[in-house]
Length: 62
Image (tube, rainbow, N blue to C red; front, side, top):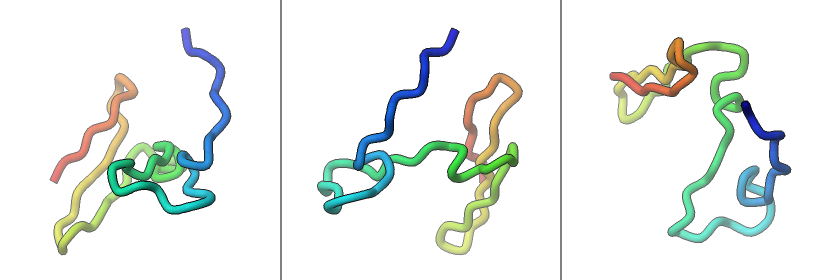
C-alpha cells in the first residue's frame, strides 16, 4: 500500500535560494525518465543506462 504523495518543498524542485553544499539536489524519477522505462545518461564521455526494473526499482549500469 502506498501513501498519498507529499507536497513538494522548494528543495525538491530547485526553487528559491541555492541548496547548501551538503544538500544534494532532489528530483523525482519521472522527471528524468518521463514515460520511458530507461534513459541513457552521458557522463564524462561514458554512456550509462538508468532503468526501472520489473520490481519497480532503479538500476544504473554502464
